[in-house]
Length: 151
Image 1 (cartoon, rainbow, N blue to C red):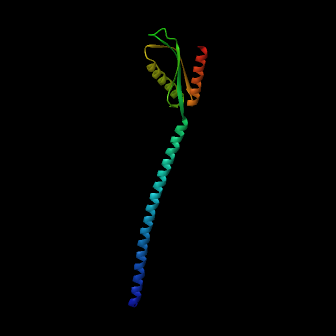
Image 2 (cartoon, rainbow, N blue to C red):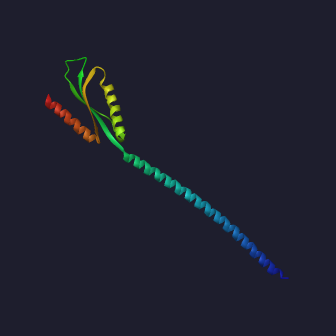
């Protein structure tokens, strides 16, 4: 039989080994939890990045434009008034594709028809789509300058 102090040393070593293994298991599980949290954050970041990229692609497919309607109008009530050329310019519209362009034109033409009213007859109208406000305003100035020359 071994002396008592050998048994105490072996028991102490086993107890130390048990404590170290429990401690390392807890650290390992904490490390796994941290890894899981980091992976979930990374997945969230990837998802948000993909959403931002999709929104950017969607914005690139959109076209921002101004719709303009040029009309020649004649007053029905006061027939002595001469015919007038008018230029109606829409606010900035978001247009997606060719169908969106036709829809924007129709919607703005309806708005102009409501604006003109029933006491004025529109003899002629033309619809234009401009990429910038500057182009639209330059074209409007050309129309009004040409009208002044015609008078």
